[in-house]
Length: 261
Image (cartoon, rainbow, N blue to C red; front, side):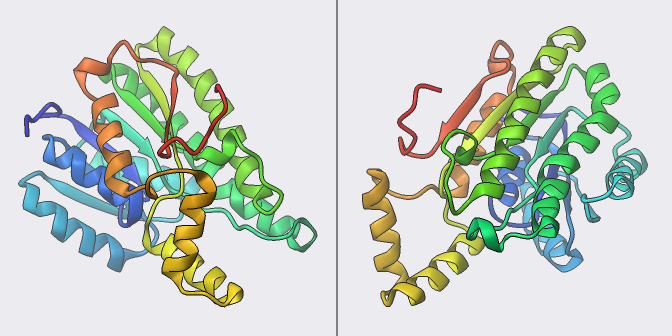
């Protein structure tokens, strides 16, 4: 594989597991050194050991991005390690599903604090350096930004706000020469999704495989997504060949979203 990102430095939040981990792997494989960010030191250490096989320099930062202090810690870690940045991938964040009347203010606030505010704050802190590098920002948002669901209101609201922010940021990026694009993964097979399927399958009295097949049939897709599906697109959007792609939002959901936008 050609090293399209040789000499680049990437920060990937949520980079220890799932989609974020796959993105960091793909960016490193294509030549980028990476600072991966997540909350759990043990998961970060495991991911860093595996990513080191690419031959790239891999650094870690174990912080909680729910607070400004956590985001500032990432900036400090970046300054202490690489001292520069070319690529920021905002991938951290999970939101809770459930019946609307069961979701308290604290649960709503938590959903926004990590996925939305973490990305906003970190992007704001790193934007001057991204401008100096004529860099790239990729925001991993999610298909529920486009398709609201009654049992996933927090995720839909957070994703919609994040998508709007991303579009506006792309306008600023035109002025400051920073590429900004959004990726909307559909349901993607990760450890977290596996746990959700196990719980919901047990509630329905069927096996997790049977539950997954029902989801595939309901969505009318060939299969559920894989983290590598998202990672491949992100790597392309970070490459020189994609420099003219700006302010777009691309779904990686196998065609599950039938709307025009």
